[in-house]
Image (cartoon, rainbow over all chains, first blue to last red; front, side, top):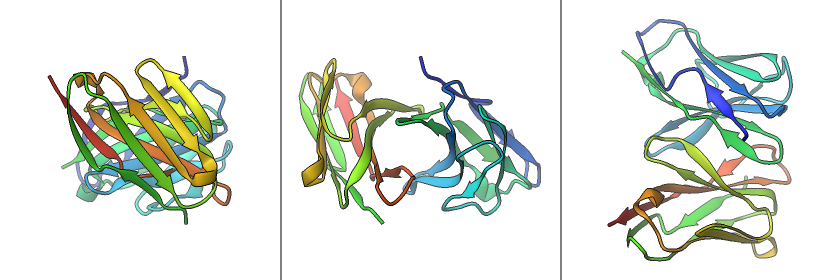
Length: 109
Length: 109
């Protein structure tokens, strides 16, 4: 059974904190993605990666960075969290078919 | 870029009813997927169907690539079918999954 896992389902952080969201896939996929989803705005692509140590900006990269040191792991980093980064964060990986993790609901106070 | 339109935007059904959801896209695609987003926010893969017809239990899907549309059929709907259904495509000139705006389905007992 294919699986994409995310480190937390719910996370509460304070403004200015550094936040790490971890994503792991077990399908040996080269392509991995981070999205955020907000009511009325749909899914928006933050960053993606086609290979280890590779990263590409998506549609809304400002305020975020990523790390891909191993093929199976893709991390999203909020260097200094702000209240407008309160959102649902979804990780995905893709071979032919794209699979999503369960999501992390991040609240920044 | 490619445009993906879904209809209807909202659908309310009584348990046991059948429904058809439509996805139109503006360019040729080499990947088309249907997802169900449950009330907890998780995106569940329903079908990977760039062309042809597939069935999985009460759900089936058909993509007519030459006419640029896909249909998702839900038969004998159940309350657990409630949620948002997304169509998403990858066209030949991009490597990113582009999502439609979704169909929100509510099934009442």
